[in-house]
Image 1 (tube, rainbow, N blue to C red):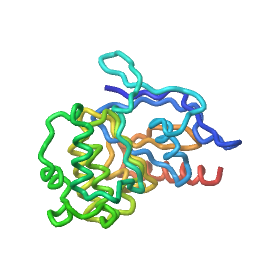
Image 2: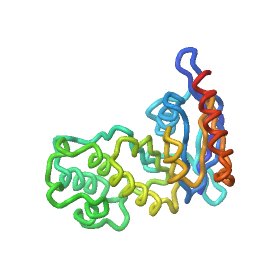
Image 3: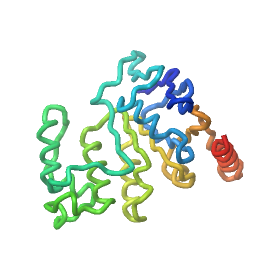
Image 4: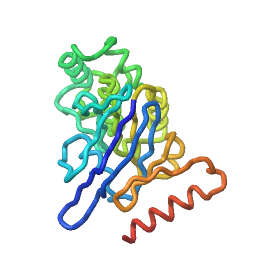
Amino acid sequence: MKFLIEHLSKAFDTKQVLREINFTFESGKIYGLLGRNGAGKTTLFNCLNRDLKADGGSFWLEENGQRREVGPEDIGYVLSTPTVPEFLTGREFLKFFLDINEGSISDPKPIDEYFEMMSIAPEDRDKLLKDYSHGMKNKMQMLINIIAQPNLLLLDEPLTSLDVVVAEEMKQLLRSLKAGRVTIFSTHILDLALDLCDEIVLLNHGELEAVDKSNLDSGEFKDKIIAALREEGHE
């Protein structure tokens, strides 16, 4: 499976944020979408999720050589700031999600098995979500996207504010789940992208550019990215 973006553009007033973007992503890989804060990473995700209307262009899924439109069920979107119904407990939220998606979830598991998957302790499962830490809310947001098994998983800086242990757990989970889907992980942290991602894609001057990771040890790779991001910041 491939995810194709063609001529995608978006401007806000006179600022052109996305400039005729063309790119092809392949399933089974985690792509690191690397760019400075304000480069347009969230704008790109919001256009792909159709939360924001693009000014032009299109995007498709391609399976067995056939293109089709991307439907809402194809996309999972994990926000940098978790959005969960804080008036529900973790268990109530998970049960509600499982109930309303009963027809589309393949091989559903017992609720406590899902909590175990995310290392959420038994004493926390019946707490209100409003009492969850940022990291735990993030885990719940990630969990429902994992259960839904989307073809395209958009991760908008989900690890930036997590502690070291939780962030490492999430990275291991993402690596284990990348098969059969396109995962795009946005970040402004170069070392995180290098550690987690199979491919690095630079969002620079409103365009996407693949960066070769083959010569990491030479330092040339990092120098190229840092130079490009520094130039972006002075645009």
